[in-house]
Length: 411
Length: 228
Image (cartoon, rainbow over all chains, first blue to last red; front, side, top):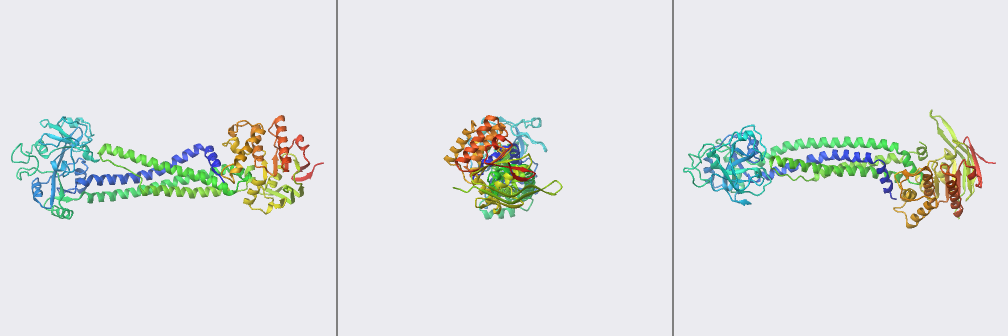
């Protein structure tokens, strides 16, 4: 038997109903798909972004805030730790590398981060795609997404608490807080990292200290940049990134620097807590989406039940022409399954598309590049919905195949 | 040659009125229809002509009694068996055509073939196109929704004839046709029936049709009587 001529005729007969059925199911399914894929993409992107920060040391305060500021460059005033800790770490055999991170200034809405060459190159892994690394206090290296060119001269502005910046735009607040005595020249551009650091301007940490009238951390001016610093002169810093020599030593270092006025943490341990919170929220959102899907399915099934009631005569025609009940059930069941499957497929595409759009917006705001993909959870959700749709279709098929054709023809 | 005779014994069809009370719409104590005969069913509207055709087609199961076509005890069949028997043996033209508006003329005509096969064979398709052409229908790709009543009636007739049925049942087959078309349709029905020795049963008010029948039965108040 070939039910398709009748299935297509049915879909043509109820084309607007079919269209809205697909759209409604699509929207319902898309919500679940978007929530799941977005949450996972956020998790993967944030974890990837923290790879360059094996251990962070800061002053005792909020662990989450230290990670958000150090790794994701979310502006916040952090308490400082003593700068001479940099020398201590430099001499610690368990440490492969240590770099200060000094925040607070902005240029055109981009955060200015004072650090050392070994962190700019991520311990030797990165090389500038344009120009070179900074070699003097008044030079800067920019992230891949910073809209400046090599040779540009920039003047940093003091970041003000609560001031929201837009990357690439200098607003009145920024213009009013310029460190007019500081001029920096852009000398290099880093490769794309798919993190917030793509929108950062990296300068020697000495430059940040000098800009704020704290000296340059060295005994003499105009000397070599970076460590060793002078223990007496080196100012405090908000955070230090530490690369342990061995994995097991990371735990020793964390333990060592969790006392005597410092706080040490692995970004991953903070992210796990954040993910747990995100996971709980996601589970509730997905649960709500599934309930939402079931309600939509139920509404559509009720609509189709009514429609089948109205179309009893149409199916009686098939019976009168010699169609068996199984043929009629196949026509109705296949039509309903096609509608619901098309709705689910549309929802998968819509949810994925929506997730890509949201990722693009988030990337535009934070620089955190995300690549949302429908995973097994989302495909499972779509499969579940198709399964429920098929069961609904069977129910509809059973309803349509019942009844006396002669009665229906006279109705 | 296939035995296309029919025997109806002790047949009644009861229905319920709006108050749920049973009333008789058809009563046939005994009726024999010879194989290959052309039978007319006459009677006023609502007398039970369509009901009798539905019973003969196996579309309606009588409340009591039996219908036997040749040696086929239709009354003992299941729904599925009756549907398959109907598809293989009966070509029925309904009073209100019962076309699928979203299908083309050709698709409507070959629709019963899709109940059993994936596709119509080349021969079946050609047969459908020949019947459509013989009824004066042009452009078999037009949708049924855009056809006039007369054209719809001819499509319904083409659909009834396409499977070469051994039993042809027609309910007022010329009601929507002009005189020329009515004559064409009637000639085709008789030609098809005679060529294949099919039994032709037509319910009609038209004396021009009834006068060509071998035998005419009149139904009055659900009772079947042989016309004078």
